[in-house]
Image (tube, rainbow, N blue to C red; front, side, top):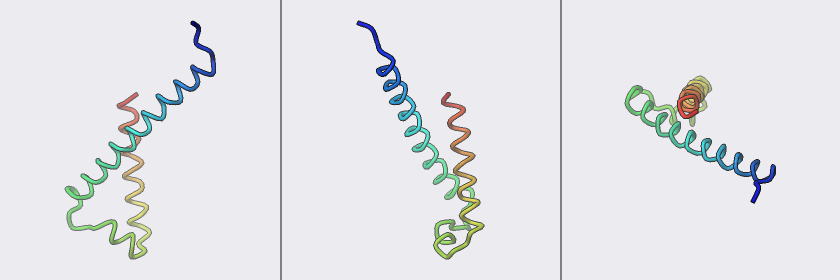
Length: 75
């Protein structure tokens, strides 16, 4: 039985989605650990709720860098 191009595409899509979910989960956990262990005196979520744009940008950049590092290490 041959595997068609559509089946290959669906399998590749499922693998990619799996990698994305694993990366997202690990990134959020890493961001939580960075937030609570490295920046103990700064409460980013409270600052973001107050409207501090700098805190939200900084928090987003940390999440992006963690996601990039984990993505590269998984691939």
